[in-house]
Amino acid sequence: MDRRTFLHAGALSLAAARPGIRGLAQPPMLAARASSPDGPLALPSRSQLTWQRDELAMFLHFGVNTFTDREWGDGKEDPAIFNPARLDARQWARTAKAAGFRALILTAKHHDGFCLWPTTTTRHSVAASPFRGGQGDVVREFVDACAAEGLRAGLYLSPWDRNHPTYGDSPAYNDVYATQLTELLTRYGTISEVWFDGANGEGPNGRRQVYDWPRVWGLVRRLQPDAVIFSDAGPDVRWCGNERGVAGEPNWSPVDPAIVRFPGQSDDAVGPALQHGNPTGSVWRPAEVDVSIRPGWFYHPAQDGAVRTEDNLVQLYFTSVGRNAKLLLNVPPTRDGLLHDTDAARLVGLHRRLETMRASIIPLTRLSWRRTGDRTAVGEWSLGSAAAPRVVRLGEDIARGQRVARYTLEGKTAQGWQPIGSGTTIGHCWLERIESVAPIRQVRLRIEDALAPPEPVSIELFRMG
Ligand code: FUL
Image (cartoon, rainbow, N blue to C red; front, side):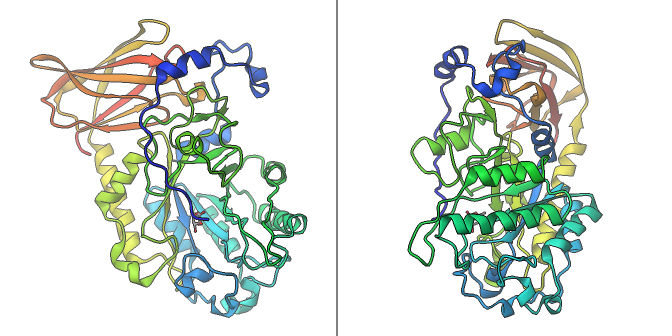
């Protein structure tokens, strides 16, 4: 039942991939773009663009596990244990906003089946708990807090439900699940991301539940057309393939929908596809990196000393946002219903470090950008005065698809041009650290391979990282 951790599968061979894209049969869903001069490049939707440009989202695992000190509840928990006496969703949202996060996702229901909103589908919910005298609704407080802080709200509704008596009776539970989803997507205003994991078990009847994903995704499309849907298999946003906080290198946003077909699927082709995407993929499905600030997803007092350090969080930013993915960082509320001081302080630290880096930007003037072939280009920029950059941020205009497959970076020192970096994909954002370089006056980016004629790439150099 646990998520598989996929090993870094190494760089994809573009030599193998390129003939593929040229010979790619036109999938029906791209037919509308048949006349595009870009050929069969997958493109993001408006919602996917907004999602990716947010860069940072906060995950909140909260529920009966918070009170039992477990990671996976068995569904037999007494709702009476759920009593976050000082719950303040505004504190969650304020903390997130102050740290530069733009969206939050709450576990409306985890595998234990306990619902954080008063649902008509079960008595196993906040309505049966002492929270706010049984009149409480954590989902409501959460979405209101996000709205008050100008942040996007998302919800995680676990399909695996270890409490509901219908689980395992597939048609009956699928109706229950659809009702729960409908409640969440119709009562609380705009929901920007709906998060599904693929955990799947047997019900009390000993039968394995068969989920109806087309129905679930169709419901989200109908009720919240602007929401992005996350799961291993998208359809809008894919899992990055591990919970270590590391997106693949290379990392393509397009994927081949024939490889990852449903959430929770596990076979040998799935891991590399989640980590790296597929350069020849026909659908746009960027990677989300979900990882916790603590060892567990839920709050455990014993882990108060094991919160990720500021350095570690900066590193996570580099291996997620800095690898063309989005970071979904889990910060679990305590039994009081508040984010822990240590976690909040580390987030402030992360924000300060990223702001310091951004403030150390080195002004650049573009001297030239020209295509040197069908799939190659070169750009040159001049630095106002000689400087030794520590970090480079590259970015493609992904509204026009992801194109770059291999690049090198050179800096002009007093001794002439020197290599200072190289890589594979770029996408929305690619961050690289530049180790000990003599001061440079100019920088040159060579696109050495691409899936389509390269568009101008943006570049930023920072003195600090
Ligand atoms: C997984 C779950 O089993 C974990 O408990 C956690 O919620 C993680 C984000 O997704 O599928």
